[in-house]
Length: 149
Image (cartoon, rainbow, N blue to C red; front, side):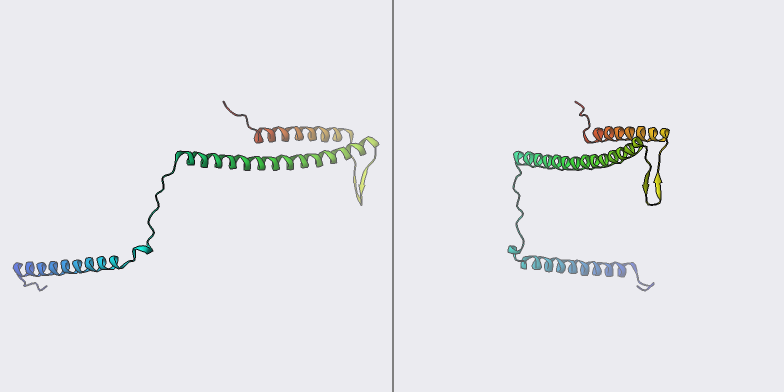
């Protein structure tokens, strides 16, 4: 707008622009309404609002709880079996060392020889028994926690 334009001219131009804007908005609304009317209603699925019964919801929750417990039991069973296998192998190895110690022999594998002094043997046996006891105690407390009632 030129600087020399008077206030009435500016107001007139503003009103013309507002009318053009309103006309463009009306045209866009009409085009939108026409395009929405052209959409085939069969293409849009109707929302299915089936009410969920309380019994169904309670049954679903109970099923999820049972599945969770079954999975927990499987995991605990696997863990305890793996722990017992490990402890059995460790006990077998210690038993073999005890056998060699009792027979007074030195374990020789290739160039490697193994012999324990009496005090070393006692420490190994004590540590092994302590380790097995503590591992079983931790496993039982973890796998079978006390229920607070």
